[in-house]
Image 1 (cartoon, helix red, strand yellow):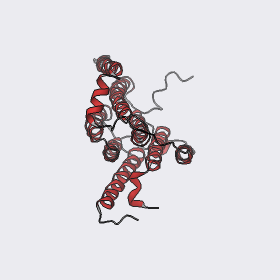
Image 2 (cartoon, chains in turn red, orange):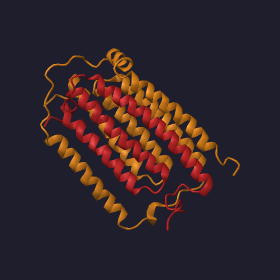
Image 3 (tube, helix red, strand yellow):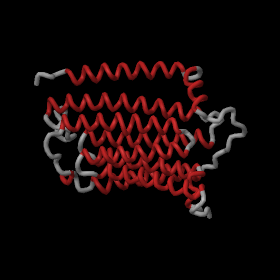
Length: 108
Length: 174
């Protein structure tokens, strides 16, 4: 295997996208704060974007589709981050904490 | 084997550097004990991903990645951390003893399954390409074929701005 020609194969990008997705899922399960979970969600979105870009570069008949989809994912991620952070600040005002365990008023 | 001192070899080295930055950033973002370090890891990871977009033949998306993720999103998260985390975060150690190994196991199974699915499938290469994916073509199809989605995403962003303002404003007197 030629390690210096890895950037020319689709599989490299697919494995990298899967790795980023896995890191995001791991962080989502492990993190105890809302902001940590938001960071993990961004990692998941990054993995998905890498997949879209790789498929549009190697396989798609129209290579602009993946790029446009990635730009839309970025826009949605920015909107999601803004909304999530303002919710986190509102939660912090009410509970004085951003720990997921402390915000459990509805728990039976 | 590509010789290391040829243009292809150097490009391969830079690509490996981008991959290393991405993985190191993701590790730091998920394993850091303090949130501010996790955000630094996220920024590093997103810069690495931007380099990978460059190798995928799209410098424009790479630039947007750096501007939006490493610039705007990370700075917004840092602002939220400064507003909502005045004291040292509680240590992560108080979680259930099985939570760490179980999440590593679940994530490993996910990565293994997705990577095997991607590498085992026989992908059909495309017969003929109508376009090359240049920036000019991206701009043209964004304003013709995908103009509806383009307008919708601006509406979504507008609603997100108004909604986050309204959410963050509620209960300001407390």
